[in-house]
Length: 358
Image 1 (cartoon, helix red, strand yellow):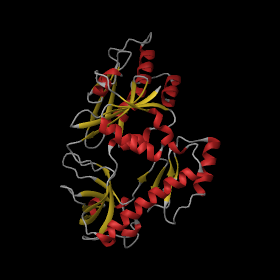
Image 2 (cartoon, helix red, strand yellow):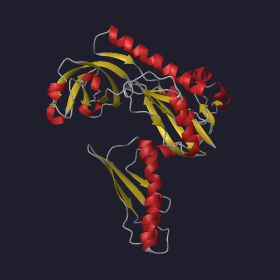
Image 3 (cartoon, rainbow, N blue to C red):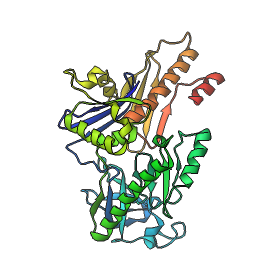
């Protein structure tokens, strides 16, 4: 049974866990004491152009200026072709532009920005200034994918825009998709009005909080239950479900037991592993995860592994376990970018092929 657990009893944070049975497979956390900027949209202006970095720095209202690579700047803000011109000829200090936060500020680094805005709805993602960014979720395949392509082409979408059909859009009617699109178009219109009305820097659209995002992004037909242990969070989720997906209302549950919800569902200890450098594997081996400014490195250790009758079998089974756990840990820790994995050497070609297929 798949379920969503939303823990909102603490003043400092809200935690969201996605699990199958008692097995945690995704985790999200929102710090209530710190402003969350990811996916927010701002009106900003260029403060510095750096040809050596092929990027500009943008003042958008935060303590640190944001970093905007040239590849993330839409043609509407450029005065020429980026392949032919020096960046200083394409954009200049003081130029105003709409930017979206792709990555939060971290350490001494400012937020990573993009002018290619994406607005997430229940079934669709609207890209209002990226005509070539549309498509269908990779998880949708076969005849169903062809059906969704036809529905996508029949949407009443303004020129110059594109949409992605999310996995949650599977099985929905043309009317459902168009209704979701109209909602996103209204949001974009409001952003445009804010852009015309106010000078930079200014917040022009704030992404939904973690409770609404969890319901919007994760509550699908395969989710059997959604448990929430806080009255205000429960009311917020119930209101969103009632407005957007009333057929899912029966899945919503209020958790009132004395035992903490994450302990009741055996989730707490699994969350703790997402903060540990070393994660143990069922066979006795382990993976060691190190994150640097440039990359994430992962080492697989079979020193104490006991599964398998010989060294080759031990290496093979440890690698299989590690591949599954690495995918889970990367998702729990929200890690991306360059990831280097040092698997245990295997000489058997069959083992190599099977490991690659995983």
